[in-house]
Image (cartoon, rainbow, N blue to C red; front, top):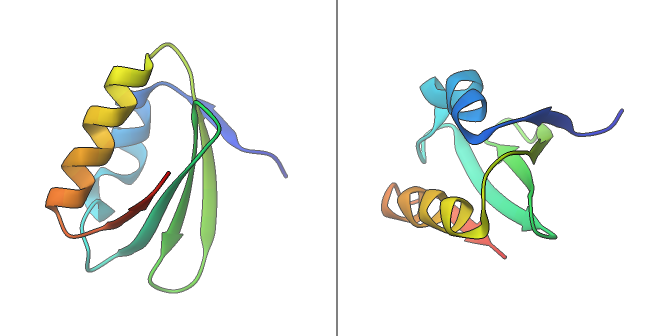
Length: 73
């Protein structure tokens, strides 16, 4: 199964309730626009972000770091 394709706002809507360090262990940026999300229950989900630029993704990742989520690039 491949990555789910969505824009950044859709991604926030799909996982918004879990965007904190109690639910997400790590977010990894793969390439320019793919996020791999490792949840605390060791389930990994991938999302291919469309319609946003590198600055948007960088801003989102910085926001996640502020929430104490490990971010890998």
